[in-house]
Image (cartoon, rainbow, N blue to C red; front, side, top):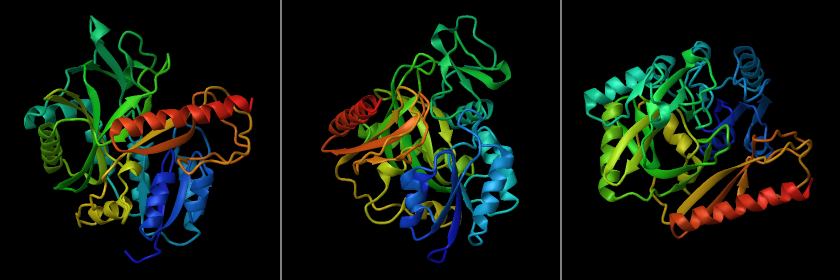
Length: 372
């Protein structure tokens, strides 16, 4: 790709992809729901999506936004982040107009189908939790999940799902730590870029809501080797392209694959190299050129989402520290439970980084309480 080529980016939040695209020499044309201050700084152009997180990305709003962005110069293609897993018809729609750098609708539909994924895991001898379309007779040890869901907010105890039954499937609850493997693939081969340990930020209604992640994951080297081999077998069987992630539960030397996220995910930034760009790896892999990022991470890094504790009618002027991103524009209205910003921390160990991230999250929340 030529330097300074324009590229469309569509996601619930496009800031991390836009920043990585800018480092790769692209001109990011971004549409998302937030239009955060730092997104506007790195984007060559931005159009805020009409709608909200509850309804998700809708066809008319997306089409209008992408048409406006394309007026800034014909893009080389489009990269879709979070928000498309449960609406693959939108991927099919945009791929008819622009080159899609990432997984197509057919691949996403298959990999997010629990029936397909469980059968694939059985064939490849990959441990996968027991699952069912019918509600288990004894649901206490089961979870209810929404097809195509992402981010953990859709997961409930099976004893109290609150969505239409046709959207729900059930998965056996398994004890373990949540591990995610970030990888880049060219349709047949995969290079694993690293593993992170993830945690939830629970509420009563959303007990598995995504909270944050830290790299490296605290798992044994033999487990890292096993998870790496698992990802490589999956990609040899399913034509995944670009940046993806695989979520596992790990208990000692045992592990289970939970799901595959067929798009660049929440851990993109904690794995971004100091030289180069993961976005560049994504674009190259989607063009059939699979290369690995320089592994220059000598310390640990963590990130965490700060969710608003209460409605904020108007975000005040704040001198945001450089350890925050996804900073809302002054005057923005944020509802209780919605993301306010993201905080980051480095550390000598994963525990150091995670602890400092938690302190910084509390500091941001203290600012919002003081502003009330």
